[in-house]
Length: 374
Image 1 (cartoon, rainbow, N blue to C red):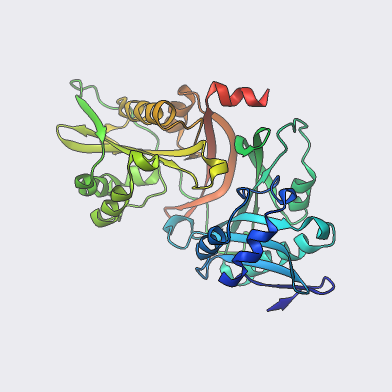
Image 2 (tube, rainbow, N blue to C red):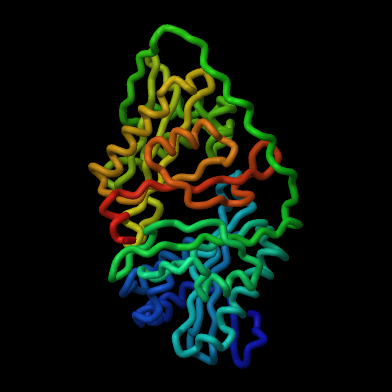
């Protein structure tokens, strides 16, 4: 247990016994506007959520003033993601209204940063800072200035990311980089894209993926070029993909598709919700990969068109987002042509071929959702 340098404030790791106290804390509507917490979240919700931070690489912190819970911070790392082990996301920092401006938030964030630097080995910590629905001022909000005082730098703005009672709000993305943690050089640049040789027209079949495609997924990502353009790596197994394919399906608003040439898988794409949080129910992420030999032949566009059709016309997603390595010019050009807009740039986003590489984050919003910002 750590006692902070704020009078009578105690900060410790959150435990399952805190679930009921957290539920009671967020019954106050004043706690919701600058967080992603759904209203009237139950103790069972918080018990499940705290379980998601049980790994030693994650950091759930609570602050007490005497016996009263007055603040909470949730820092999520990626212990099972081989190429993002250096990164963490600050999912939540909230302080009870009557204890704001008393140093509680600053004490919680100081404790988290100290742990990240001294033991968790997190090089990159990112945070999405919700804005008011009606916020149009280009200047940083007070909360953004608060994070900036800890070394967080702006990376972009995600449009219409969070549902509020009166519409959809943007969120500013910020990140703090500790360059002395897990040091490595910049990633080697992607090889220059080669124009495919002229050949007979390729007959491509695009269809939903099944569990029987697991071996094909592993073979696609064994192609180093396919792995370089995604967050996968060339050593995935068929069993890993079988597990993922089993979890995918339209019933949970997920879908995976494959591209076949002469019965052989040469590419794949997927649509997945970014969260089970109801305030993010309108948002999904997509990913795509094509083996080297079949890049530049229009197969990526065919896969993207099917994922967009599923996401917008059937699964009712109105914000579709993606990340793409900043040096993947061919993919960026494809996404731009399909209506994806640039929203920002994540520094040191992933680890690729021995070094760190930045990623652009882009999104396509339906016209109805975009209208909420005007």
